[in-house]
Image (cartoon, rainbow, N blue to C red; front, side, top):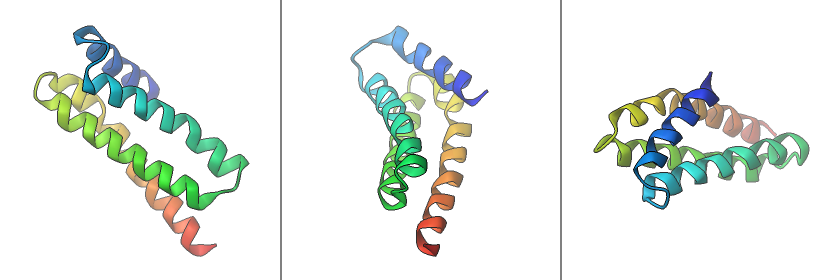
Length: 99
C-alpha cells in the first residue's frame, strides 16, 4: 500500500512538471529507498545504511514541505511514508549502536 501512495504522489507531481524540484525530490527518495536495502541487508553496512536512511527521511520531509504549497494531496500521501521511514531510521540507528 505504501508504494501505491508513493506512486500516486509522484504521478500528481509529474503532471505539474517533469523537471521541477518536487519531482527531483521524488526521484531522489526513490533512489535512496532502492539502495538502502542492499546496503543494510546484503552489505551489512549498518553505518552507511543509517546515513542513507537519514538522507531518505530528509528527502521525504523536503518533498512534503515543498508540495504542501501547491498539492496538499501529494504532500499528505507522503505522511505515512515519512512516519514509516522515521521508525525504520530509529531501528537502523539502534542496531548500529548495539553493534
